[in-house]
Amino acid sequence: MTEERGEHFIRAVERAMSVLRAFTPEHPELTLTEIANSAGLDRAGARRLLLTLVDLGYVRHDERHFALTSRVLEFGYAYLSNRSLPRTAEPHLRRLTDELQEMSSMALLEGHEIRYIAQIASPRWLSAEIPVGTRFPAHATSMGKVLLAGLPPEVLEARLGGMHLKPVTARTVTKRENLRTELASIRGQGYVICDDELETGLRGVAVPLRGPEGDVLAAVNVSLHSNSSSEEEVRNGIVPRLRTTADRIEADMRSPTRA
Image 1 (cartoon, rainbow, N blue to C red):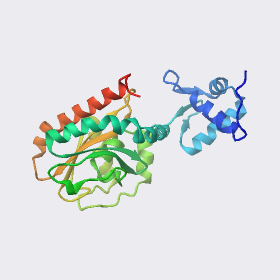
Image 2: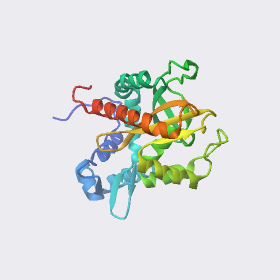
Image 3: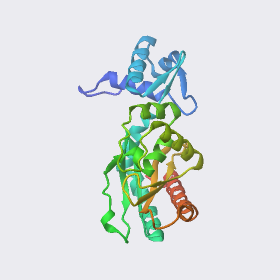
Image 4: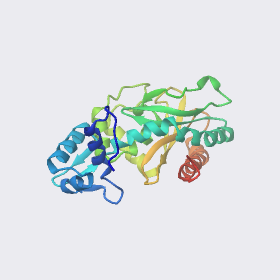
């Protein structure tokens, strides 16, 4: 029996969602015919919806196949940032701050900026607390660089092309080629140490937090005074603890007991 819908119901939205749901982990790339069959649409209708989604940046296509872009993750980010992810992360961030006596945080990438979704203030410098919801330019922060490095190559290039690499301090990277080279290094080593780029005297250390498919969902970081320890001490002492914290959050997110 057909489910009854209210007068508000818009069939075009339903059809667009059926097109998006046609893509699965087993079938990430589909032809127009395959999508039309899966969504229960004719080819002409499916094609119009797909090309609209391409124009909006949620779908890409080559000569024969269509596939989702990472932009669809924005919907998941919005859900996670306000619900389960910060709640899951907070006890682990608190434990990290207790161990290191330094501020710990988590952020998401939104456009050309990062947005803080969790933060535990340092007991040593409470004045440096950054409220949840605060935004900073991605290119000038440790978490922003980790998140940019986690983007698929074609998405990263499009993102870099539209970014205004404004200097926040004298140390901020403002040349695209230099930033591109740094992001490649971050992608390879799995962490970043960022000195004096957002604020003089501030060092940010960040690692990615990944979802079940290996995609970067968020970034976790520790903030400290840039002269409080050497870079080697940070690599050997802080980075491993930060990675352990991210691993624990990822494990909790995968737990079937989590809502």
